[in-house]
Image 1 (cartoon, helix red, strand yellow):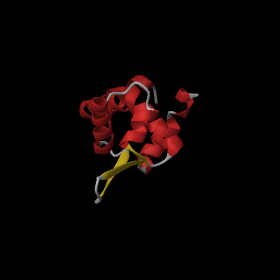
Image 2 (cartoon, helix red, strand yellow):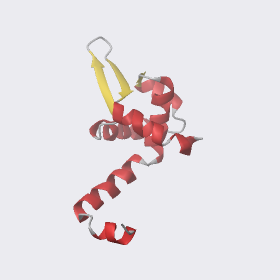
Image 3 (cartoon, helix red, strand yellow):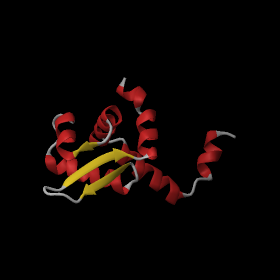
Image 4 (cartoon, helix red, strand yellow):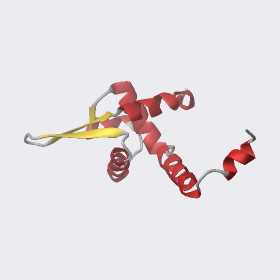
Length: 105
């Protein structure tokens, strides 16, 4: 099937969603956080802030929230004093990390 014919059949709402998700997932901070979690496994916020050079606390918080909302990572809060929060990739996040492996190399 010619590419032009395929594109003509795509629902504009689906196309807009794909464009939005690609833009969000392919941003610099998301890719660097994916890499840090892929290489080092489950980590705390402070560990991530040290591994992702140049990221502010505000940007790290925002990016982690977006990634959790998009199903790329799981945030686990442990009931202890002081509170401990761990982040780890979901299977979807691991798959995305593997897909971006060539970009990192």
